[in-house]
Length: 240
Length: 125
Image (cartoon, rainbow over all chains, first blue to last red; front, side):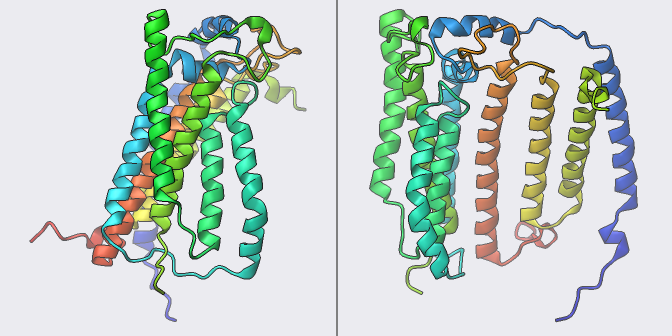
């Protein structure tokens, strides 16, 4: 095996490096001057939102910001994720060559059988308790997709059932918009919190009205989309 | 000896310098590497530096995570939840863009057998 001849000029572009160092130094200086003159206590929009947060009865303020105050943005974000998943499916569907040629071994197969239910349970826990503790729909969905990835790399014949994914994604997308429309009908606000959300219930599992519901829906959608993305990226060849 | 690091200016300077170094490492890789996958990795490194900058600059000493519970019912000593929410959005969008780019690279490699941008000459003819 012959080693590739190393070209010093190509491996170490000194002009680019020195330009980078100079521009980085300039940016650092400007940022340091800005930071040094920054007042220590600033009244930000986050402080106002933190005061408003208790009115929704949700303990985790980040969840309230994502799902309630910026609920429409989250809907758009999920649409972006769906479009990316669609693009990956279209891009990798036409070519049927497999992407991974390595074989899985016995240890990986046995361990994945034990680990997959635990990973699934942990993902669902993170999803359901998103309004009480750090976590939520996006994180839980990605954890579930990592469990699916473990099954995909360990079992050769495993394939994510396409009809189940389509049903889950359709259910999640439609119910997100339906909850928003019910809020529009009941409270005249899109994604209005029409379920009871009393501050005395804060910290319980059943609290916060529609906010945990929407985060569970987001988790279902993100989990199914990420599972589809990893399956499309791996794409085992079943004939070999 | 750690009192020196407990000043907000020092922490913010360290976070700024570190994330800027990470950003320029990513930009350097983006401009000098030829492999598709390495270019996408560099973009991911640049994204990570921006996440680090946002979260690090809003961190305050003795402030807790913005989760109200029985021990922390007061919203006065809590970190700002907006950068966290923004960065969560940015992570998801960055992941989607990265996955789409990697799928483009995989498909291009399958169709042409090339992995470097120097060898891309399909549009020339």
